[in-house]
Length: 169
Image (cartoon, rainbow, N blue to C red; front, side, top):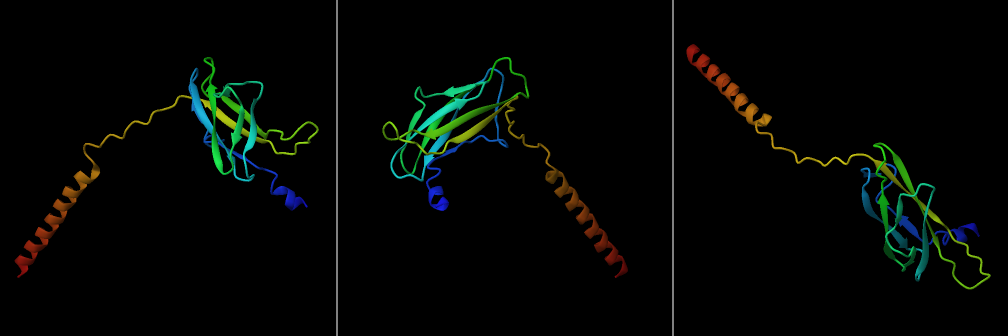
């Protein structure tokens, strides 16, 4: 019976481009829009999902005015989150945007909704985002020096052995 019930235990999922080993890095006072994806691959038909931002220190809100999402079967629906780092945040501060997603109750009054809530934590670290500098071409790469020098050394050795051989012949 447990195996039969577990197939429909989680009818949707949430994916995020940011996680503990790949946090969102932002500067103090910066505002950034990020997108998560709701996925419905387990329940045929549309699934209504209610999204919620949890926590005492809220630095994010939904871009959409309505936090109820309709997720059609076998599709992905983007959920926009606007993250705002406080102006007085210090470099190295860490925030976790706690999000939860649950199926909306279906049916009329008196119905008991058995569903799973999916929680997602979006790690935000305050730090300077360092723009990668394009690599400068080395004006004198090592190969441009080594190849002629080695060629010259080999040429000198060959000439030395040729002259030495001519003396003894």
